Length: 353
Ligand code: NAD
Ligand code: DAU
Image 1 (cartoon, rainbow, N blue to C red):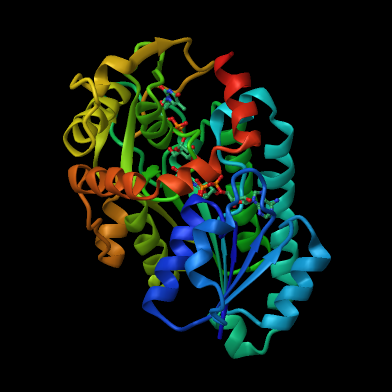
Image 2: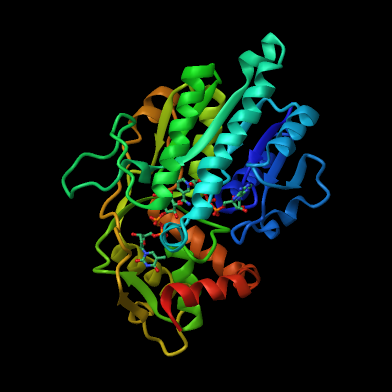
């Protein structure tokens, strides 16, 4: 048996591949287009490991996906592949529509054709797990209850709208064609191998480089942070025991303002890697122009996955963030390699010279 993972060279996908192969011998076929966000260095520890088959390609390439499915006969597809950065979706939405909407549609089509051709037992066991986001539910008022799986979809950015569209397609393929799908909607992840355009790794990188730590607007926007390893364990659990056609929200019950996140990060850095001048990294915090249409608050109610599947996060924000800071301090070369030309161009576009 094998599973097909898409987007397995990105942040969450590569953590998933590494965790999966650390715990089981079932091979992974990893299909990734290696956009700016895909980084095979994340998977360098798997070099020569026959359980990991990497294929560079696009989820929107029906023929390629059909060929991979026919050759490797996976029992499941786990779809991480996406354009994932909200700010990029504001500057250039088209890639988001191409991959997140059209790409997911073509992947579903290839999965449907493959699943239809399986023998009865294999058909019954097959799963298509779609990895999605809490952003599809829109922005919460300060005192509103956390998102449950029945919240209305109210996406506000081109990114979240494209993810919402993909979720709807996945749902429709179950209701119309009977494809055995599972959907997960997770809150903000942090941890090893996150591309340094997202808040936490960006601030890690800038702090050490003596650069400003940019907070959008008043910095009081709220996100619900989950350590990436906990997201991976939740996906494994949903794949193993989730009910077909169901949606599972995944989160860490951990709401923080962006100010709090960056202040905590600075405090850990002050302790583990103090500035040469003895002052706090918090002095590098600056407030910059807000993100257009910036969602004020996300919060996930993870009650369903906890009750139905017995999943709980292993890390608190305090333990997870400390682990993450240590990881970045211990992997300076990884950070240097990632901050290549493409990344610098992006920084210039987003923050100016
Ligand atoms: P990422 O941007 O780090 O990685 C995305 C990966 O997908 C990259 O390796 C990229 O090369 C690949 N990819 C992009 N377009 C592709 C295509 N057309 N065909 C094949 N591969 C392609 O993203 P991430 O943060 O790891 O997020 C993974 C998934 O999880 C996404 O679907 C995202 O919406 C979802 N998600 C992310 C978070 C988070 O906090 N990062 C939270 C909840 C859900
Ligand atoms: O909620 C899940 C989502 O979390 C995922 O679906 C997305 O793929 C993922 O990128 C993430 O989206 P966010 O927009 O919440 O993540 P980001 O790290 O870009 O920003 C986190 C918060 O920090 C957000 O309120 C914007 C703010 N921010 C971000 C950057 C990059 C800043 O204040 N300054 C910054 O420089």
